[in-house]
Image (cartoon, rainbow, N blue to C red; front, side, top):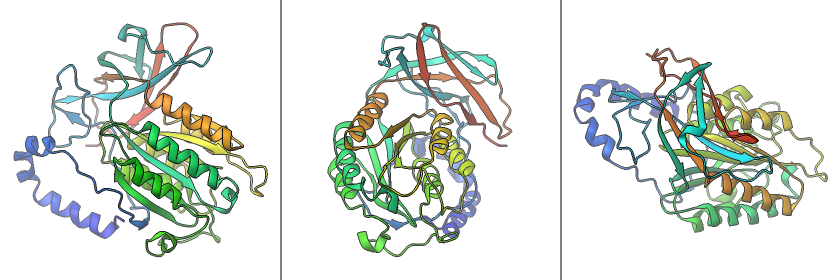
Length: 360
């Protein structure tokens, strides 16, 4: 669990030693992150303060490598990466497009694509997020089975994922790991309305508002900002929920913005169980997915869950990467709207709708 006081201390220390860091930037960039394997960190709380902007500046990369956007210490070339999935009118994946088939604009201004690739095996960082509030009581067993199969089938070499649950608490059941077995075990430990003491952690730390119930927005923020934010490359949240939030300290807008700033995509498996007494938040799910370039898949039974995971798995493995150097070079921290179009008729593009420019 990241504590705000620790984060503030680290920030002060970082400012003090920045000149030294600048001299060793190239070595720091080359060092890979080695995440802990399968650690259960227990309950989590919002770290406070906005995450960094999603566009950062990096040295040029060889043509065969994806341009990086996670290096704040060197300032040579700014690249915005957009991951896009394209389907035809029959909803089948379109996998034979070239760079010339795509058009990208930012705030209405055409942009020149400087990097293009069709990525099938580029590593992915995933956050598997399971709603364990009372409304999920009848579906939790099916969620565990489908989620376990998903991580075993979608995880390839160098992929990594975490498992989180949220109800009146937000609990991290598995920290970043490449081991599907660890992830599957964490998924099967999820329980309805049980704080971290029930799954090997410590007591909850997120205050409830008006009794609380489902801290969806807090959970999304923690996953996107605290967990996925520092990661590079493709990043996605897979959220299983009815998207009814009635306990978060943060807002829907906070949650969406955290995903946008983290360069991540939110896919929602929207569970509507007719046996549950609560409603479900279709509008919230649509906003969270559409504004970040993800998809909403509504399910009502176990077979629907299996199909939903299959669709998400297919899309994660069938993406184009479009990189461009924005014509707007102002470092003003504003939100820039991205539009990706395909010239081939009868196609649909799924891609994020924007990013936050870096601040001065």
